[in-house]
Image (cartoon, rainbow, N blue to C red; front, side, top):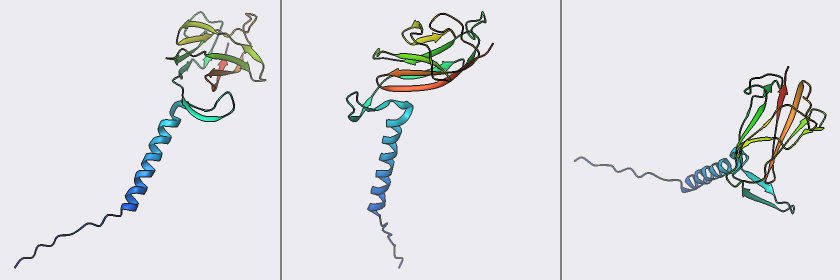
Length: 148
């Protein structure tokens, strides 16, 4: 007589539910915070989450020389995706926090560039500059450098 044994697996449903909650929370946090697509504050000051389709794709080159003839190195270009055509405000500041330039030169709907000049048309001195991209309550900042 050969007895067959059937093994019953015991499932710990609490562990499965905890794992599911963890994976769900991980997925939600990944979706919510990837690429800074979310804003947490309304202009009125109320807190909320809203999707903003704007995305800063590339800022290049990070080191450039306004005096060069080659357009690939004599300006810094800001490439972005803006499907809702929201108003994009890009400002350039020096390291002391003084505004150097706003209203950058537009190549098309998704590219603007800074030619290294200030508001008066003078070439800015060598150094590090801070850019601030502001769209729909989202601010993205970074650094670029002018070299001679």
